[in-house]
Image (cartoon, rainbow, N blue to C red):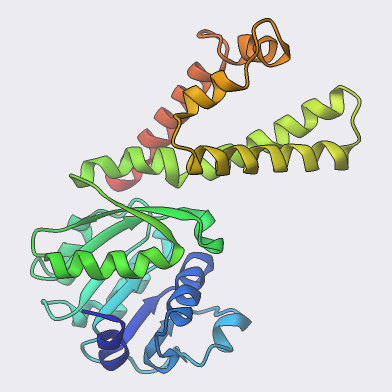
Length: 271
């Protein structure tokens, strides 16, 4: 199944907020015909309305794919809209957090190809990373289609089992918020040492963004990159001795942070 197939049979977006819009923008840029896209959203943005897609119109009976991108709390009201499309001909790709494949199978039917994905917010600028898993009836072609679609918003990785999705949520799904908070904290620490708020924030943003880009591009591990910039008895070592403290430093804080987010994801998945 290709973008041509989607253009011929139709693609339905159940929800088109920030994540859905980021994905739609990538697909249109890659050649998807906007007139083949059907958006179901009670509050479509001006951007969506300007794309030439069908908004809140009658849906095709058997679209090639349905992207489920509504918030979990809206799922119960939204899923009946697409229930009649279940049964095997239409592929369902969910990017909604905390909703298990089993839940979708109960509503759409166990014979429906259902893929669950966990993207993150850097997808809005094509720098996201998405974890993907399919149900038992999902084929290699279905997985390949999902890869082709999700690669429009960044990297895609395959999971061995759905049980890994909660940990993925704790690391990469929620992770951008941790980094945004770190930027804020780093900037405020700079202010405390005498920098102006604007300068401290500029330094913090550029430092985190640059370090992330270097870590991603380099063949060296993050550990080695850290060692490279740490002179014995220098300023970086002085800072790292605080940050790397096993009792009060980052290892314990980040470990607890990811564990808490993972546990909350499990709770949401279990209803």
